[in-house]
Length: 90
View 1 (spheres, rainbow, N blue to C red):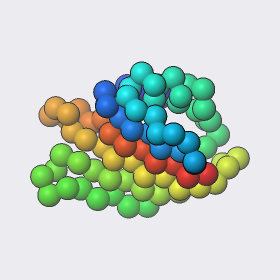
View 2 (view 1 turned 90 degrees about the vertical axis):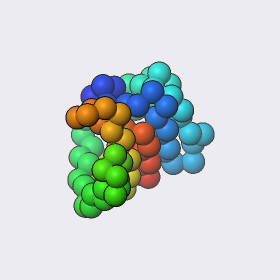
View 3 (view 1 turned 135 degrees about the vertical axis):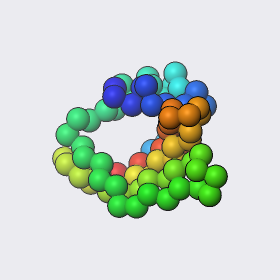
């Protein structure tokens, strides 16, 4: 799971019609089971908050499945960015 070092402690993961996954440990377990190295996430747009501490990235997913995604990154310390929210619709 390449996401693990990038997950915030209180990360929220949302997937198609599933109960939200809350917290780094639960998210890491879920992502290890569902990670598909054949999916390619292509960002279309990045939006930064005025304070510069949040970044929203959204785009498409392609590969053996197609869909869309949105990730919200939060700066936790200078130069350290973590995923706070991820929404994937396949």
